[in-house]
Image (spheres, rainbow, N blue to C red):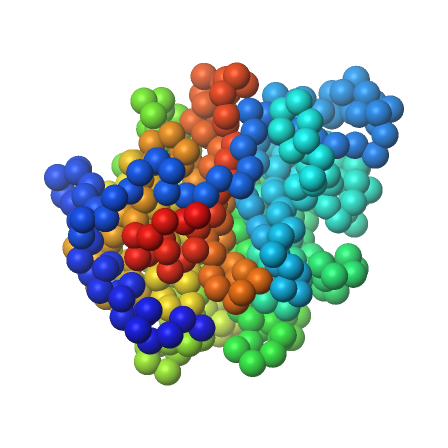
Length: 431
């Protein structure tokens, strides 16, 4: 845990920084320099270099149209430090937006190939090879979450290009053994076949042990949140006007290129346990195509009796519009001290907010801006390293090019970067 002095220092810095959204001009304030090398580069690729069990398998999926080397786009990064090891395991999701992605979840190897470091399928190739034909495997994964007990929670959307091959599923894999320790298959009525796209899982881990109370799953295209009570093996859906996109924010413009996205809820974070005695625990969330920052008390979200099918007015008075950013945010992560970080679309940057302060322009800090290396930061995680310190890891993918004019494979398109949370929020070097 960060000591009290560090926490006070961070809060002071954030309160002195500002985001001048009203005028459309962003300022960092406090005299902190934010240069283009502020984040530490971990992984860069012009195109993803995917490994296969055999050369023959690679040729088979190429000839069958199941692998388009120019059509694989990573979305999320996850990281796990094993028993004090200084070198973590790094995982990447590669959703199947369309046919042509041979596997949807991978780990970064130490093998360097022509396009960069080779990726390999996780947990193994067999989990992915059916492309939705076998619902006991993985169909399409957008994001994961690794908890502090060494389990990777994998949210499988079950669809490829909006064809619902399988029900959305949640797997928990023990990273030490590679074995599956939990499996949940979403019941009909909680997802919309041909519409839903489940993109983000958030785990409510007990403060004192490895028990998971609830899992919150964002349906970005179906515009809702599904809550899963792990112990009771029950789940319910939350959907209303606050989980939907906003018509003013369906156009995304990055580095002079624009494209359209009409996505609802995409990011979910929780009030840290360490603040539970000083403030009510909340579920914080936002829609991708919106600038609203939303919150709702966790005890309301977790009360399954409140949420009836197709009731868009349920507990509506419990939802709080905390404020507006003036731009879309993609990935989000919460620090142990209650700093909510988000990957801002315009300008390409990372914005931080102390959840104990009002969500106002003067309380939002642009902690780093990088027009080149933070283009569409879709993956964002805060993890604890081998020294027990929090690190922010990000993945950016230049999605405006992938969904627009096309990626230029002579340039670096995909980046994984990191920085210590304390260093990032204090304006200190990340290296």
